[in-house]
Length: 501
Image 1: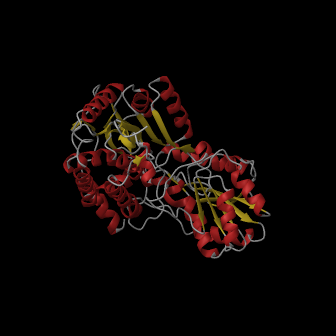
Image 2: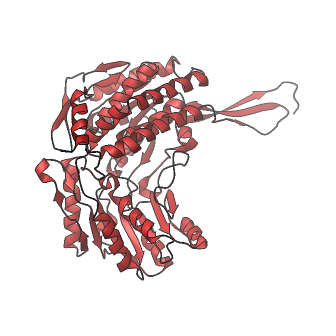
Image 3: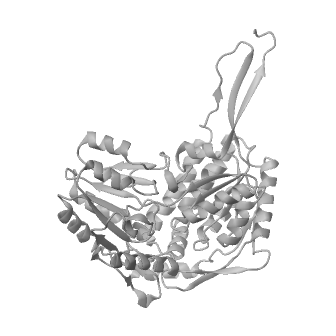
């Protein structure tokens, strides 16, 4: 055991692990007393029994959120006052960054170095960005008319139900909570049952920061109980969701079955990364090809799980990717030296192993990995895995694994590359490596995806909108566009007497 690992284990032992709902400014057990087991992916141990909220708890949380919205305790604050409170929340999150990173690592299995250097800082940045943005989303003044003054203003929707995933629990939560609060809404957040702890802790910090009781509530629980109840609730104005396509379809149905609440969906992907022979930096492209699918153990919606390589460079390039990936070894998430951790659950591990087995059976060429590792720990680890010579009709090319499995597909020319890249029900992200500016521009127009990156992967930030085409969903997180989706647009007209015709 390394010194860093020992120190982190000691810090975890000293923490009180969050396990209760945060409703109307109070920490509460589930009304019916139910709990669910929160299992750590690093070793399969029980972290805590967490309050299992159900429809009754959702009712209480939504009622609290509605009261808070209707009496204006948050939405009627001045922009300056809301901004100050949200900055205070970001300050508190930063002050508790080590605690939040430790909670995220043991809850999800991600390396502590990533939780500390990426997840928590980006979550803080999201809150700060929307704190600063809340007084910069302006309305519109209509065209001049001598007898009228017309303008349009953004007004908060009301009660936002947010359902967030387990791969980036805190980061994704703040992508939704930040702009929703900045617009003046109240929020009921349902974290994934695999990773509830940071959401609960941040809701506590929000109260300490001065967010009024009832404005930001967290109801942990199972998707089929708490999540469904939130999506069907007649007094929830919108569901903002990041997760699987299966659940996204259910949320659309629940909207129709209830009050036609708005739904924003950020769903899955089968993202292509295309490498042309004139790639300006083959070494950088090889590193990108590996880490864009193995980062966070492949549990990333924009993971570049399809690597499209021109046949003229295929053998050499794939060899370089294998060389990079062979140095990526699974390790204990709490060890500061670990760069590749555990999968979030036994179920997710088994899903990845099943896809690996299917790829073998369908004749793909296994170049690296291909199985479970570190099983003696009791944790849920799968080795970085690369399959070459994957056909476009293969399961590995069609379905999202959400695990550390890369499929390599060859192409002969530019037109074929774009045809293969777009031959998917998804459209979340895509990328291309080329030194030809014209080709890069053609690629951005030809690729059907919400994010297209040229000579880099995941190469943008909070200022750019994030979302998908096709079955990758609709609605956008990040940027000022995210604030707009949590608002209604109201048109107002004054008739001016004596102002003319």
